[in-house]
Image (cartoon, rainbow, N blue to C red; front, side, top):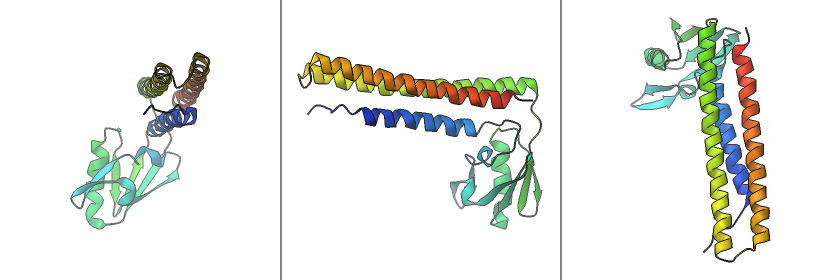
Length: 186
C-alpha cells in the first residue's frame, strides 16, 4: 500500500512545528513578567512531577512581578525549590502560601544570550519543517516509482511541498524577528 500524498497533512505538521516554536519562545524571559515563564516548570508533588498550573495559580499583578498562589500549604517549599532549580535566574520570595517573583531588568549580555537561545529554537523549528518536507517528497517519489502518479503530478506535488515549506520557514523567521525585537528592547 502506497502512502497517499496529502499537502494539508504536511502543512498541518509544519504548523505544529511553528506552534512548538512559539511555545518555546514564550518561556524566554524578556524583562517583562509573564505567566508563561513558569508554566513549563514541573513540581515534585504527591509522588510525581506535576505542571505548575496543577498545584498553584499563576498571575501577573505588575509588569515586573509574578505571583504564584499555592493551593496546598505543604507544597510551598516544593514549588519554591522547582522554580530555583529551573535555571531561569528567578528567586521567589515566600509570603505564606504566595510566592512573589520580581523580574529583574535584563543586562545587555543576558539579552544577547537570550537572542542566541531564540535563534537555536528557531533553527530546531526549521529543521523540523525540513523533515516534514523530506517526508512529503519521499511520498511523492514512492508514488512515482509505483506508477501511482505521473511525472507531471510529481513536479506539481514537489512544487506544492516546496511552497508550503517556504511559507512555514518565512513564518518561523517572522516569529523569531518579533521575539528578538522584544528581547533587545530596552
